[in-house]
Amino acid sequence: MKEQKLIEMMNKLDKLDNIMKEVINEMMKIRSLSVGTLEALKRMKGYDKAIEQLKEDAEKEKEKAKEENK
Image (cartoon, rainbow, N blue to C red; front, side, top):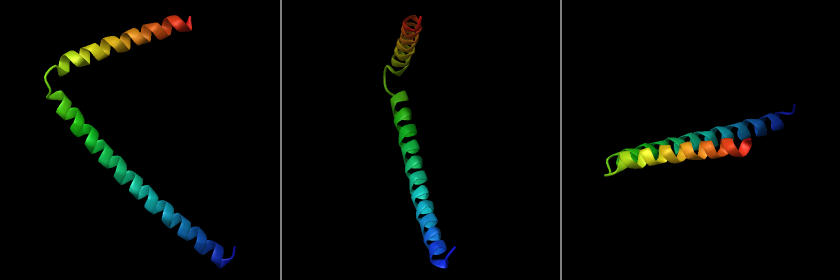
């Protein structure tokens, strides 16, 4: 390969590396935001009741999907 082509490939790899670092940083920020939101929700009044309702709804959806697949 020509030297110029190798330099271009190296530059592209450097750019990809930088992009991946940014993606990882954004994912960490989103994770932190999600954890914070969940902790805030857990402290709200009625959280346990809402969780139970969500479990019941998920179970109903599961049964409905089973019946449709028969």
